[in-house]
Amino acid sequence: MQNSDAQNQNAQIKEHQSPIWVTRPDDAALRAANVNLKTGLATDFLNLFNEYIMLGELVCDGSLERAVLNDWVPIDYETHFAQSGFAQAQTVLAAYRSLDPASRQSFEKEVGTLISLILTHQESNPCPKELLGEIKHQRDFVAALISEPAPANVCEVEDAQSAIDALFA
Image (cartoon, rainbow, N blue to C red; front, side, top):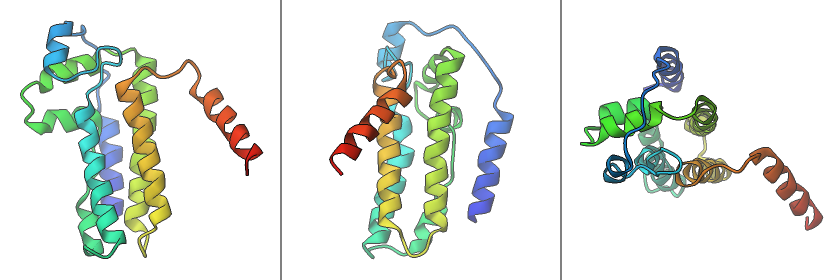
């Protein structure tokens, strides 16, 4: 699939999402579905991005042809689980839909950034290893949002870290 087609599909996914909100499943159901009780998110979503990173590394080191990266298609959290065949998908989706709207929006923004980085990487030739590093960093940030509640003000933390890094540069 061409990258512009993938971008259009990503836009259509976001455009067709309905703002569904439901009651949060109980803790036992969340545990059974591997949903983090604090964040309401499941790490299985990261597999989509981990696969791209693995393929990207193999392309960058010359083990695979570049064309393999074009098979990766952006997909949002809800669509991922709706299409996954995962037995507990409905629980995962209910947990996601029960999230505070601001938390969902913040998570979706960071996932959107990750997808944008990957789409840029798909278009780049030759394979930019430094961009793959940015993709890994953003994937790790998304993973942290799934695994633990976000700090009160992530921007302040990042700005403080940048200031500290500048002192040692």
